[in-house]
Length: 158
Image (tube, rainbow, N blue to C red; front, side, top):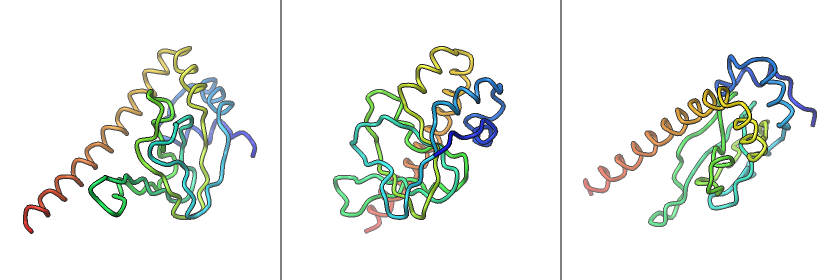
């Protein structure tokens, strides 16, 4: 598939307001992919080498706790521009969840190592992007905390 336009990247909160030359370099590192409904984009425990930005569709991010028989949904991503698979550039490079496309979805895929090199070469831009990624991770951790507390509270009532 063709390389995305820098303007397309600017639609993501992760890359909003970055200089045009940075957006062009990021665009050169990415490729548009299609994930069909029911397909796994990645699975918990797999080596993580890519991170993704959702362009369209729905992606269910879930974990499989050992004590449960069914996967536990962390978040349903359905807003264009959302980050999927941040483990792809954070050592140790193993996905901490499974991402299943709930409908045919278009995503931008970034090679994690190349993405990291770009951040290292551009520390100011790297700091901006890392803060934004940290905000995503923080929000997802709060979501998980809420799910765990709800399950513990529900378990105590039984």
